[in-house]
Amino acid sequence: MAYKIMIDAGHGGPDNGARYQNRLEKEDNLAMALAVGNILEQYGFWVEYTRKTDVYESPYEKAQKGNKGRVDLFVSIHRNSSPMPNQYNGVETLIYENGSFAEKVAENINRQMEWVGYRKIRVMKRPDLIVLNSTTMPAVLIEVGFINSDIDNTLFDTLFYETAFAIADGITMSIYPENYVWS
Image (tube, rainbow, N blue to C red; front, side, top):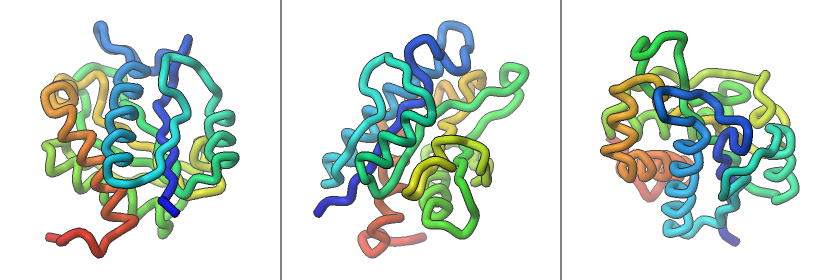
């Protein structure tokens, strides 16, 4: 039986998430979620989505969708934001608890994103986030760079597919480490 992964595109519908110039986080999240999901499907994973269009579901509804779907891993895709434009840049992945399988997934995603060119910030424990604390399976929330960072937006736009592959590869190498050569 194939490993099941739920891909969550953060925000949606009337909830735009962060905004920078003409960029809406919900749109970036959806585009990246669909790209990552497509790659994972090509890798042989069973992929489900919390949304494939611009609709809103609460974080709790999204977590419950993962629970009801009995998926093995929940991956939520977001963009970070800072108080001032170009204040910060880089990738950060959030988890419920340290020492978990989710932490391994997060570390591998961040490592792969660093190869693309994103600055690796950290893996951070955030037990207060609903998509992390209300799922019954391991869950990660990836902040795919800062939406108000010109450096990260350039990477996101010009290396979009490389970014999607980095996320998918970080997930895959966590699940099937024997298929990867570690450097």
